[in-house]
Image (cartoon, rainbow, N blue to C red; front, side, top):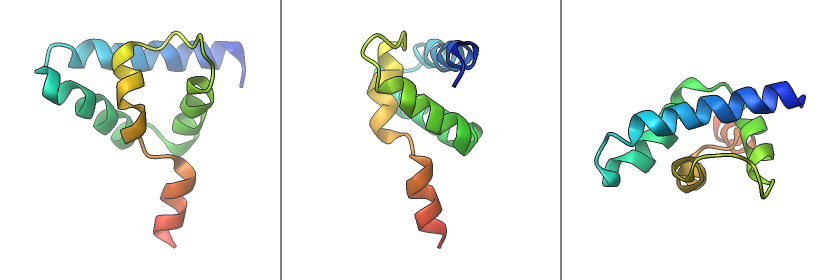
Length: 81
């Protein structure tokens, strides 16, 4: 993954988090995860998980909290079979 792609995905994920910060705290984490699950294609989510593996990834704390709720593309493919 190019540095430019990583930068764009981090930016996009952080924008989503910024939007959901206006929601009640109890809904914000789920809102971020649901948005990414619904609108990001598997390739983008796969790249997001690669970014999450890095310690200094630049992701907003809300994205980090939502990460366990984001569907991994491999798991999705197995559910379809």
